[in-house]
Image 1 (cartoon, rainbow, N blue to C red):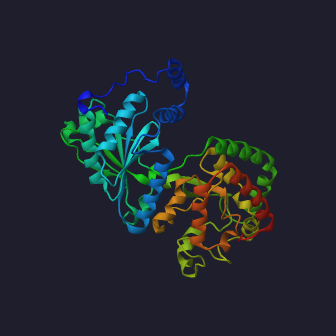
Image 2 (image 1 turned 90 degrees about the horizontal axis):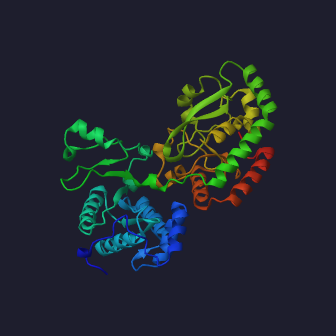
Image 3 (image 1 turned 120 degrees about the horizontal axis):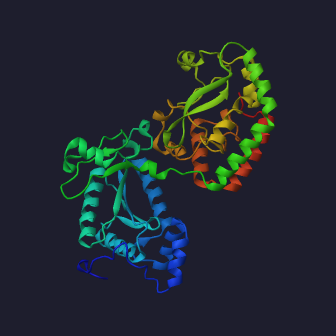
Length: 411
């Protein structure tokens, strides 16, 4: 291996594959395909774990953190767009500089990551600064990003994705000095003061790293089926709207803030099934709550109207959520979007249901709904998060039809 004095190739260097056709092919592929191709070309570098293995190590460390309350961190080194020989050199330097307990691997090829067990934000920042100096000395400096996971020591109410970074030029103008720059941070981020030799680094909550966007096949299925069902069921919507209007004062559509991926709020739609002041009455009824956990449920809820009972038993009150699906707020299949007041009571492992886009139906909805305890409900959502696939979605949609007609678990 070359010494540091040998330096790194620049980003303008040629991709040394020994085959001009391979270079042209790589340029035509998508970012992920190029990354995977680069990983294959490099082979199995000693000390650098594959993408699948690295993500398995991250999941294992998160499970340990949820049990033992220890913090751990991930530092991602972004090498996208760099030639393969530069990426290989960065990988070698990371491998040689890591601690014995650290793991180096492909986060999303060609980006590399270093998993730092038992390391809070401050320790991760020190590691990033050290690697910043090493990479600069080797003339192959790359951008890095720090993520930290707090486990049980963290406040679950802070489960929200970070906002976009503030403009660096504006921040420097406001402070008058880059060395004095400290960006304002939301509660789920850590502001760490920069040194004179390194730029400001934002430490983000690692839970945002685990967010799982909708696959293309899933979003396509959501758009096609929700649009089709909105058209076919238009007469049903009209009939239900008239029934709700005649049931008493109040809006036809009930709107409520719910938590989407990462806890980000969105407006959730249902046909109104309760009296207009239902939310205000909820506080007085909590003493007779029949559900475990942070959710509220009563078999004979006095707030539900006579029409509302029929709508709930037939699940017709859920129909407006097809508009949520078409907009992209929800998916046809996924964890039930929670109310915002539930999230602060979640245990860390239960927050994993917030990694996905919420759905109209899912494992819980087709397994008895309110006959299922809260802990088992959360386990079902985590199970779906771990095994989401096209086949599973199709199976759950088919089971939903039977669940609606049987009325099992509805209230």
